[in-house]
Amino acid sequence: MSEESKTELFSLTQAAADRLKYLYENEEKGRTLRLSVNSKGCSGHSYQLDFVEAPEDGDETFFSHGVKFLVDPAAFLYVAGTLMDYRKGLLESGFVFENPNEKGRCGCGKSFSA
Image (cartoon, rainbow, N blue to C red; front, side, top):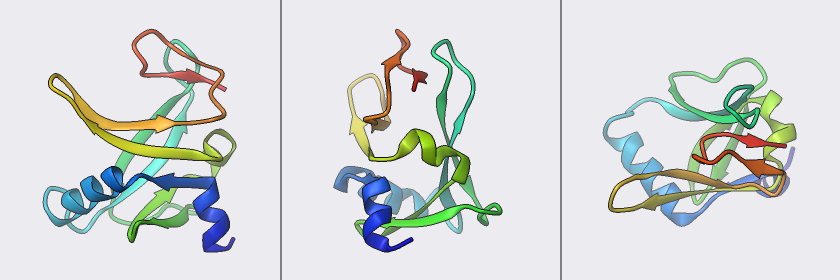
């Protein structure tokens, strides 16, 4: 898969890339972010973010804004075209997903249907 087609599959905003750079240099030194999608939550699916020391079999390596991250191949069906952002608020901060494949989200925003 070319780097250009990978960027179309899944990419980061500059804010998300900056946050990952910070985490990679501090709390998660030596680890890489891995995205997967689990079947759970009241809407059926949820994003799972883990920092791992090595990729699992079949994981695809992506780069966005110079930052490396991994995507579980089973998640491709659910995340094609997704943009991951990092938002910092007064009460809550974290990574959020703008996913064109989502058909709906639960009330708390922790799970989605595709």
